[in-house]
Length: 273
Image 1: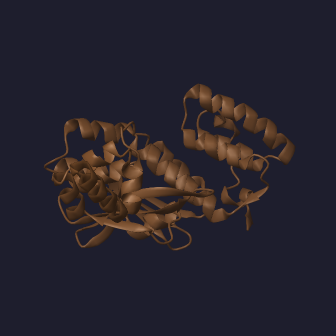
Image 2 (image 1 turned 90 degrees about the vertical axis):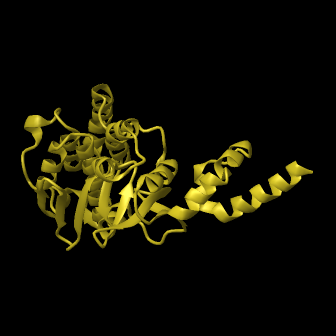
Image 3 (image 1 turned 60 degrees about the vertical axis):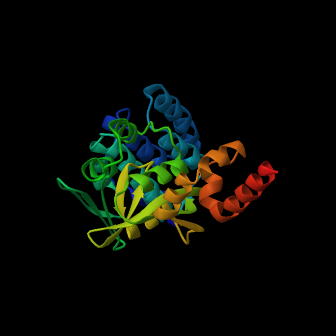
């Protein structure tokens, strides 16, 4: 375990304290425990009033009462948050990464972003909506707008199913447990682009190198995989329509597709009697 103070360079952040949540992070981690509780109370109110990122509020709440935390957990959280804000059209969030120990270099190119970490890992990503806009024959302008606003109608499970159908080549919807200060169920899409393994994340609006994605999300081993042709087959067989009648959603589908197909078969047999 490293003290959380060691993550940030020894720089004066007070000048822009109220400008960004990143300054909030620095103020919190530099404070003594008693001061930290007061600062967090104020900063949560400021963040809410400014309409700032919910993930940052979640992070501040996590820090409440904490003297130390796992170095990797915080770096992964900050990377996840920065990429989300970048794909929302807030490029300055990647600039803030340059102030954080553990991040060696941030390269912003026309076609992609590359983040080099001190532990030897590289994060390479680019916009999912832009890629699909250029390569997909099925995605609509409305879908693109939803992706780019991060106000999509779908959660990660349903979004992954649609991303799989939008993507023009072979792919799989993958489900497993990610880790953000605690495990949660998550889905994404895996495929190859130019012979390289990538992950497409609907909720991030990003295409990322698989190793980098698994690191950021804290993924160990997936619990289920569904191939793109299986999803298309299920659409053609009205599986999702029957699921709605059975009050089954996307989460149940990505976790237990085979069981659901069995349930649907029984339902249709009983319905036919």
